[in-house]
Structure formats: C-alpha cells, structure tokens
Image 1 (cartoon, rainbow, N blue to C red):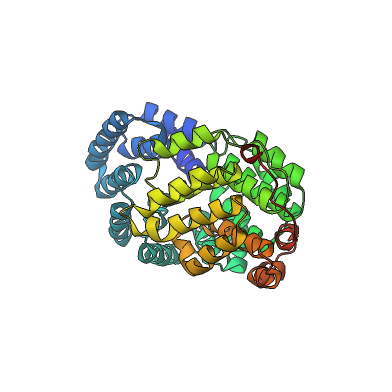
Image 2 (cartoon, one colour):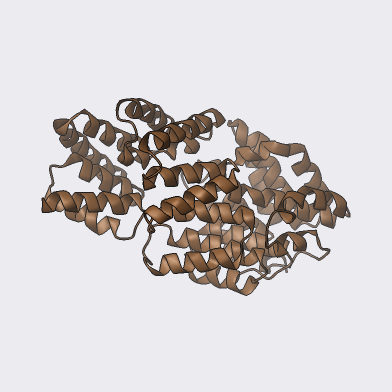
Length: 415
C-alpha cells in the first residue's frame, strides 16, 4: 500500500512539473526496479541530461519490464522512447492510437507537446483536437487535463477561456505547473503586469526547484517590461536565467533594446557562434531564431548576414522562406536600416508563424517590425500594427515605447 501511495505521489508531482518529482521518481524506481512505467517516467523527466547510450539502455529496460506488465504500460514506454529521441511525428502518431485505447490517460498526456513540436500546422491542429477530446472525457474536475486544455486555448488566442481554465485547474490543484504557465500566457495577452508578477513570485516561492522556475521568471520579466519596470526585468534576466538560457536572455534583452532601454547582462557572441556551429546547432528553427536574437542584441550585423545566407542555402523550406528573411531583417535593424527591415518583415506577413515557438515568443517579430516602422518614419502603420495590444492590454508601456521615436540603445559589440 505504501508503495502504491509513493507511486501515485510521484506521478502527481511529475504532472505538476514539481521540483519534488525527481526524488520521488528515483525512489519509486529504487523501490520497484522492475516497474517499467516508473523507469520510463524517470527517463522522460531526465532524458535531456542522459547520453545516447544510457538513454537507450534505460528505455530498453523500461519497455521490456512494461511489456511484462501489460499493453498500456508497454505503449506508454514506447511513447517515451519516441519522445525522448525527439521523434515527434512518430510520437504524435503513436499517441493518437494510445488515447483511442486508453482515453484521458494522464501519463500519456505528459507528451502531448509532441504535436506542436512537429512544426507542422496539421499536427498542431490534430493535437489541439485531441486535447479537447481528452479533457472532455476526463471531465472538468480533472486538473491535469483542464490545465492542458488551458495551455491549448492560450496558444489558440482564446485568452479568456484559457484564463478561466487555468484558474479552475489551480483551484483544483494549486501546484499545477502547467496551469501556472497557461495563466502566465493568458495574462501576457491581457497585460496584467504586477498582478502576474506577484502571483508567479508567490507560486515559485513555494517550490523554488519547480521545473519551470527559470521560464516563469522570464514571464515575470516580460510583465515587468510591459508595465515599465525595466530594472526588475534586467534583475530577473541576470539572476534567474542561467548563462545557458541564451534564448530567454536574448528575448528579454532584444525587447529592452527595442523599447530604448539598457539590456541586462548579454551573451558572448563567441558562445553564440559556437552554439550555431555545434552539431545540431541549427537542427530546430526556433532554437536558431533565438541564437539570431542573441546576435542582434550584440549588434553582430555581419554574423546575422552570414546566418541568413546559411538559412538561404538550407534544404528546409521554413529556413529559406521564413528564418532567412527574419534574420536578415534583424541585421538591417542593427545596421540602422529600418526601412529595409520593414520590407522584409512586411513581405513575410503571417508566414512568420512558421518560425516556431509559441505566441508569446513569436510576438517579438511583430515588435521588431513595429520598431522598424517607427524608425522608418511610419508611426501610423506601427500604431495600427499594435492597436490590438494597446487597446486590450491593461499595461502596455512597452508597446507605447515601441511606437515612440528613440534610437536603438548601442550595445558593446557596436560601440
């Protein structure tokens, strides 16, 4: 009985993305080393830190033991195998069959992000539909599925629904990390500023080791920027984000620069070049875009042009048709040629969504276009571009500054 309670607690903490999950999962595996599901879930939680050989070894053992326990357990272990190997399309395809047999399986729900990770709009839509069906099956009192549905609604732009669902999930289970994250997304769209910051700080204080600690601090930094507390945004970037969080640091700093503010501690351009040149450095379009933002913060115009040429020559259409013009536009902004950036980003239009990431992250492309329009002497067009934000967000100091005439703050690399 104690073992069953321990397993249930471990799964609950993992569903909540709690910092307490890993010790509980390790204890579960130690207590019951022949439990394939326990080993699979521990591997799912730690896969990014394991070498290929260890990862494969653990998953082979997990699948073998899960197969002995039953078909559902074996199916879960196989989904983990695919997901940890970043075979997202295969993971998504497998999950469709899994949920058909075992509806609303919460452990399988941990991997529904595979649908959006495919980078294919058709898969993303399929994933949204699947989450809706599973949430309906699970019912409104199931906090994990309510939280996943909240995240889905936030990404669909159905902000009020997302906010209501996230609050419901948190009322059912206050430590739900998925719900807290979905709420942060919804409140970003609403520009709630200090309200969100206070909630996130209080939520994180209860579990400083929560899986999303750095990411939720990044959300708090964005809310600080929204309401004009730029020193708090810089403090969070410098204290809450690690040196390896190149993307979140760059996204914070580029927003600060676009608003005419001093950035926080910046990245080392040499480190960014190394990341781009490393094996897999350009394997994912959104990761590459984040590295381009880091170069833009450093006003590394030549590096940006070189990266744009590399993207132009890539076999993948998204890299040629979307990443290349976005990176080239960043180069033009850093070179003081805003009108050229306007042309590139305007021509791209809604195709910018193909850059990957989520709405909150992709918004920075629109920010860059607004700043370029303002600098190119077209404030009316810039204001029109951001009207949906300045009229619906409670705090929008950031958007106001994007429309105000001011020079881009000079960075170390350009001085």
